[in-house]
Length: 412
Image 1 (cartoon, one colour):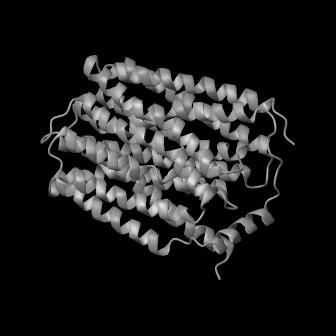
Image 2 (cartoon, helix red, strand yellow; image 1 turned 180 degrees about the vertical axis):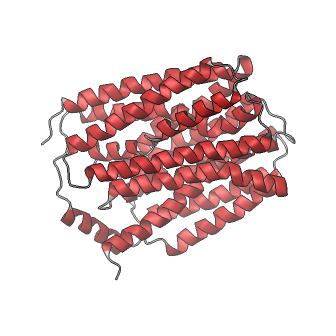
Image 3 (cartoon, helix red, strand yellow; image 1 turned 90 degrees about the horizontal axis):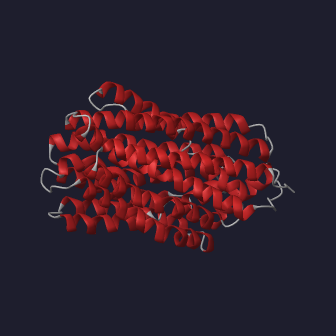
């Protein structure tokens, strides 16, 4: 019989690998666009559309997937592994694509596959004793997938070609999906053991009784305002380095991997700080305000550096690169925090709550790449970054409103 901590670590490992695969699938197209467009020419607007389609499907499907996970807990494992195998099927379709329409059809499969992970996996992690540590580590797995994809995709493309690169990733995704199907701990008895451990070792605080609906709406708005920045930085960085900063394709892939690696490091750092800050059983007030202050720092600095990117000349490529790295570090500091805030105000039906959170975020995240690409085609990338800076400023406003509303709420 496994101890609760051993069981928790096993589940954390496999949900983390699922998150790693999810992010690889999500950003593989972006990583290979600079190679793919040598065979299938694309405008920046078309590139944005390919980034928008999967997110639009997430909007439609995430809440429903979360609801299925809440109603049928044993389905969570199966939703995760089938989605990862779906990512492999997407990569196979991409490898055979010959036209923009073929790419669209493949990204439809991508969107359906991506939607099966976040609502159910985050609900699983929330039902563990060390939920905050686990949320942070899980986010690091995901952001590591984003960071490594441009570099590995570049190597495969150089050694073979972009079509073979998609096929190699397809084999990897399908193998991981099959492994999760076989070894992921997922019986009612195991989950009851986790829940009993959590309930026995953590004194439950009373639920928020006041302004809960307003707070939930504000969390969704915060997430929705962060999503365009997250999506566009992750999706367009390689193209921006290549087309705006005049780096070579290889340099662009390597620099993108470095930038996203900095983001993954920042996520890990904040997860560590968050875990240390709440490790001694501090009150919900202290936990939530620490996280909100961290979010304010993350978005405040990000807003400033997005506006700097919109203003400085792009011929100063090294300066721009430095600004981009600082932007990635501070923005990704807040990557793992929102789900933990949601878990504080919505302790029940977490799959549905996280589904709502991701639906709200992915609606704006879906629109953003198309807007970003259209502005770059019509004007330039400076205008695209100005758009992101304005959205990031709105996020600051929503964080302030949440903090003010929360501190006026009554805890019972």
